[in-house]
Length: 598
Image: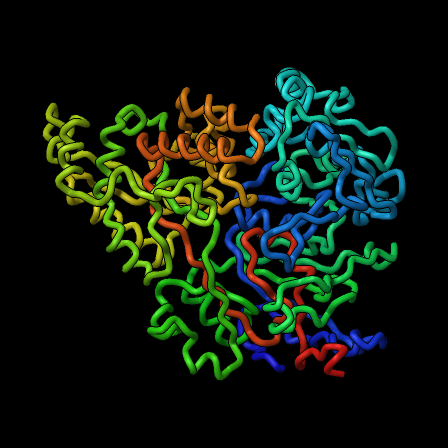
C-alpha cells in the first residue's frame, strides 16, 4: 500500500514492514516502518509529573511498569510486564510479592556514568525509587492519590520529604526489596485495585541516575525500559520515537498475544501471534491543534489513525450509523464504542463566587439543556447524570438531581443571591470565566453553546482559550474559575471517578476542583476498607449522590469514541486504557496471512 508522500516536512514515505514474511520465520525484507499520528502539546516526559492523556501516551512508549493490560482481552485483565508473573498475594490481601524479570535493561544514556553510557539492568529498587518520587512533596506529583493511605510507611515518608533534601535511602516499611529481583509491597488494608494502579505511569520504573544526572531537565530526558526511545522533540511541533536498540541487543522477546475474542480472530488481530514486538521502527507525531488540518492529513494518508470530530460527522457517518460508502471503498475502517469517561465543567471550589454558593452551581446544572447538547455533539455522547459512567454504574437509578428546568434554575439563581442573574447591590449581571485547553473551532463552538445555556438565567460566560500546558498550569495553581475537562478512567472501577472529589486529592492532585465534603471523605475512606460487595456499591452510590447534589462539576456527557484508521494499520484495537499499546500495532504492504491461510 503506497501512501501519498505530500504533506508536512519530516513525514517519511519509507517502506513498509512485510509481516507476512516474518510469520513464516524467514528473515523479513524490511526497510524503515513509520507510524504517523497527531497529538496535543506535551506537558513533559517525567512519569511522576504528568496527568494529561497526550503526555501519558508519550511516556508509555518509553517507560513500563510491573504489569500491563492484556491488549486483546475484554473484559479488561492485567498481565505481567516487567514482572516475571502475577504477584503472590498473602491470604489477608495485604502483601504483594513480585519477582522482577531478569535481563531487562534501561536504554543507553549518558546518565549511566559508571558504564560509559550503557543502560544498566532493571532491579526491584527502581520501582521503590519511582514510588518514593511520587510521594516526595517537592516533586509535586499529581499522582500521589493512587498511593495515599495505601502503603505502610509511605505517608510518613511523604511528610518527612517536605523539609530539606529528601532521603531516598530512608526505608519505607511497605516497600521491601529482599533481593535484587524481588519487590514486596505491604498494604495498610486490602486494596484489590492495586494491580490496576500499578499499570499507571506513576508506577513506571525510573533509574535514579537519570533524575540525578539531569536534575530539573529530567522532564525532557526520558530514560526507560520501553520499546521506544525519544529520538527528537521540537516543542509544540514534533515528537519522534525510535525503537529501543536495547531490546535487540539483550535478546528481549515480548511476543504478540495469541489469546483474544472471536471478534479479534475475524478482524485478523491474531495473525501475528508469537512474533516479537515492536513491529514499527519509528513513530512520528505532530502537534496538530486544528481539527480540519488533522482530517485532511488523515484523508491524504499522512496519519494512520484519527478520531472523528463533530464537524466531520455528517460527511463520514450515514444516518444508520455506518461508515460512508465513499470512505469504506478506500478500505478505511471505523471503530466505535462507548468510552469510560466523563466530560465536565469544573468549578474551582476556592473561587469566592462559585465555591461557597451551592445554589449558584445547582442553578447552572438545571440550566444545562442535555437534549440540545447531545444534538450539538451529533449524537456522539450520552448525557451525564453524575460523575460515574454508565458502564460502571453503582445504582439502578441514573437520574440527575437537577434535570433541565429553566424555571427551577431561575428560582435557584434567586436563592443564590442573583435574581435574574444580577447582583442586587450593583445591578450588574453575573460574569464567569471558562478556561479551555484549546482554541480550535470545535472548542469555540462548544463554548458558545454553553454560554447560550447560561445566558437564559442571566449569567455571562466569557471563554478563555489557552494552549494545553498553560491551561493545566492555571488549574494546578488554582487560578481557573471554571474549566472544561474530561476524565478518562485510569482503571475500570467507580473509585477512580470518586477519588476526583476526595478532599486530600486537591490540586495538584486529581481533585482539580478542590472539593471538600466531610461526609463524602468519610464514606470514601470507609469504602476503601470494604471488599467488592453490594455494601461497597451502596457506599459508592451514596458518595455519588452527595456529589450530584453539591454540583462541584457541571456534568456534561460520556463520550462515544469513533476512530477511523487506514487498512495498512493492523492489529489496532480500541482500548479505554491505550497506554503503551503502540508495540502491538503493525503496518503492512499487503494483508497478513495466518498460518491456516498459508
